[in-house]
Length: 219
Image (cartoon, rainbow, N blue to C red; front, top):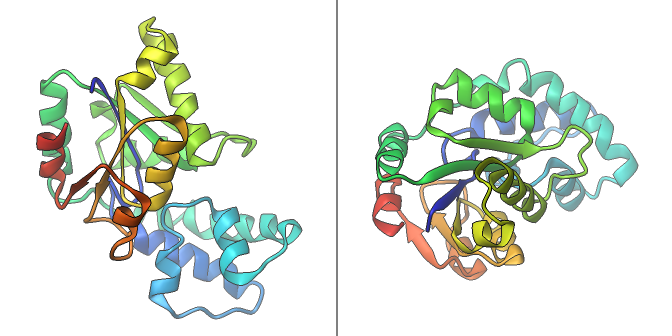
């Protein structure tokens, strides 16, 4: 593999506290006081629209105001309630030294992908950073990955199909595995993230990494 596509939350950064606090803040605005950490942790990874609808049965037309409330907290405070996992900077440096092209493929909004990676000083490891688009038209993981292929092809001059055939996704949730499979590439599931026990295996991750360092061996 030549192109390594990394999820951000739960794969590069331990971002659960900020995300869960933002969700709690949003839910409180509609009178829901959520204290179940296991339930809140399921918001780390998938698009917020999907999680609010799935877990609380909130109609689509009521989800947008909730996301506005979430951002009220997260964009100011929650985004900083995070840190790269131990071993991530060293792992990324080792992969760069081996000549891999490193990209971020995240459902997190693009401006927050840039903010997080800049703030925690890991941006320089990446040749490309891609998040969801401001219009929210590209937010699901398969669409984000396809956008990464397009941008890599434009940046390198390589055909998109060749980029795809030389890419692997690296993520901590079933959404990363399913997204990778939807576009026809394999996935390394990282066990140190936020996936419940057995989720990555059930989703069919081709490889599993218990630590960031294991990623180096697998690729």
